[in-house]
Image 1 (cartoon, one colour):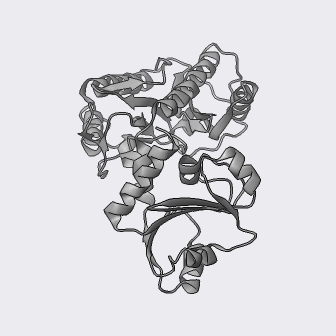
Image 2 (tube, one colour):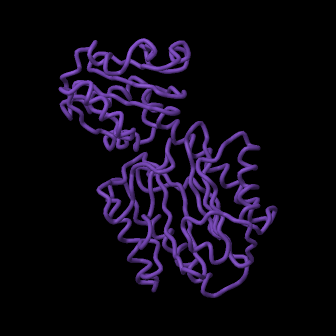
Image 3 (cartoon, helix red, strand yellow):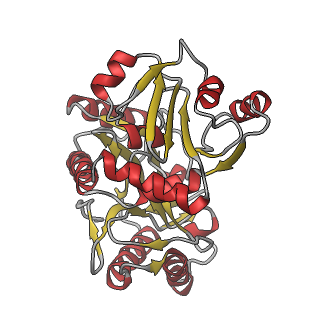
Amino acid sequence: MGHIERIQKLRDLMNEKNLDAILIPSFDHSSPNLYYFTEYDDCGPNFYIVTPDDEMLLTWECIKAKKESAVKNCTTILNTTISDYLKQRTLEKKVIGIDGNIRYSFVEQLKLKLPHLKIKDIKHNLMEIRAIKEPQEIENIRSACLLSDRILKEVREGRFPQNELLLKQEIQKTIVNTSAEWSFNTLVAGDENSANIHHIPKNNHFKNIVLIDFGIKNNRYTSDVTRTFILKKDEKIQRAMNTLITLHNRLDDIMEPDIRASDIALFASNHLEMAGYKDTSYSNVHSLGHGVGLDGHEYPIISEKSTHRLEKDMVFTLEPAIYFPGEFGIRLEDTVLMKGTGIKRLSQFSFE
């Protein structure tokens, strides 16, 4: 799918929501939504406007935008404000959809300058469009996953130190040395810290177990993987690990296109409850999974409260876990692709 097809999806959304235009702002580096629809990455502010018969990118660097973006028409915000531009296009009394992933103050100021403008928040609709991945997007994520696999192999072979902070630094250095970048701060949690889902790596040595959660960006698209390594034999830890591996295998068997995300999440939590992990199941603290793409967390959301269905060409994570606070935690996370008959695991590194 190219730029024209993506813009047609915006125009289809305009018809569906009875909108006269769509506005996607970005105030720092291009937001995922702005980049997706314009292929333009630059320091903000940038404003992308689509109408039934036109599109315009308002930006600092018009020459750069005309060279790098997929948008036909560009103008500089040094000569016009977004409110003035909307007036020029006689949109000041119309209904426009705005990407709501922006500063609240921007919308308030726009309402003050254009009091008759009607605004609808379409951030959820934009994320739903991006949830179905194109072949090149899938390939970018798959390549990021392959690099994640290589790094995990080096960790398992014992090339890195058994220290949370040093291991984090080595993983991130390895990512940079492959000309990639990490998509979020690498989480390394050893021993009892592995039960803390938001643990910040410290200068702590570990000896029994270590949980590693990291993501790699490839051409702006990200992987997300978590592995837990058992360093010292322990029956309680091994039983929890085996239970999660069995659950992943069961998920392979039951997942298919159009299945409800809530049904999958309920199946997973019930599986752990029947195995005796009701009070220590991940479902008490986080969802079963989430979409990945230009963002590390996007649609679909895989939780018992989710309204999403898992459609063909969606890419998302599966990350069931068992946490014993003060003792240990195990989380096993793969990035997966929904195919025509089931899922394909883009993360290939084994769980054991």
